[in-house]
Length: 201
Image (cartoon, rainbow, N blue to C red):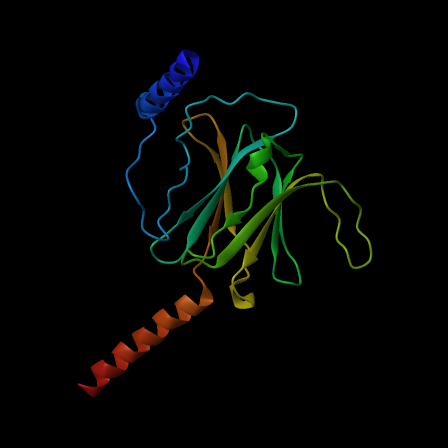
């Protein structure tokens, strides 16, 4: 009986100290967030210095929505890498990081951005093997492929891509997308309506 009480007391002591341990490790609980509010990692915030490897390693795939409906996706790498984009006949954009590898298993997890005011709906990542071009199928380099699916066929587009090295030592591949076409059309219509009102006056 005394042994059981001792174990129970130890369990309560550990449970009671958990919040303190979390605070010491820098974890914050800022309360609930609004729906659609971005809470992810931002480029240049890593506290670890990357090491060069034989193949480029993808350590993070992130997303930053913007107020005007445009969006920025970024791929964090430990070093520079070659990349290419291809928009297929189904309106899916495939971005290949040549020779790329995933640094960790969870790096390949799917990004779901459907609830944000952006043109992109989801992003899936996978390893790809090299293949030659065949009839009806283009050639593909080995590496990591990120597939961007858009909310509508009209939103399909290639990204404005750029690569640069940040102060944290990591290399970032930035992919910028224009707002959804429906949003762009709505803003254009409102502008025309305002112009008509001015003419009536």
